[in-house]
Image (cartoon, rainbow, N blue to C red):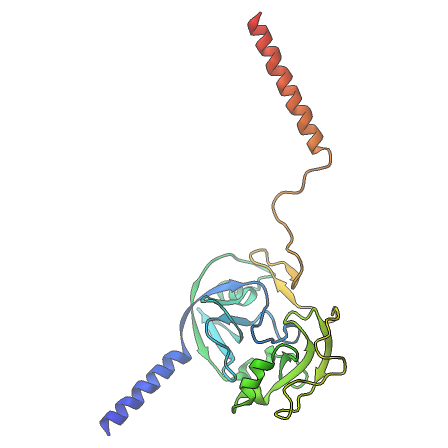
Length: 254
């Protein structure tokens, strides 16, 4: 009996460690989702990009620093870092949004806790509160969730949008006759690469705090480009310097 009790305590302790602890959180400024969650239908400023595969039920975490905390959707897998959306990281670090008072910095020790998905309900912007997935590119992940008793298996909504930043496809819901079919049916042909502009995803760039359209080319920084005459002025200055040097040499020679 004592061995059984001790084993139960060890299992509970390991589970507690797995469900919470300290992570070194770093800012992430470009929305993505390795399982095809559509950024135009969730709060893309409250995302956790953490190591490990995405779970079918455990997709909501609470992250805290000092007296501040936020809920994050864990819907993307990183290569090893505990990245979080820049706006969430900035708020936890400074108490301000990244758009109002952007800050720069690296990894900061923060406390996390896995919590029930209901805590992240405000982060999901579909009409019925179900997780929005790409009908064309989320089926492998969704199938794994449908094959077991899971939150996502019971709370998903497919859309005919091809990419997580919602730039291709049609913003329309699709239906899935699971398990009779493993491909969704949509009003338009599934996976049609039509240009989509009605459902933009906005990134908050690090460390400027500027909002930019996700997927758009980066705005180059640094000094302003030279004026059209700058090259000619440089050539004139160079020739003048050469003439002055030659004149000085000639005077010395004489």
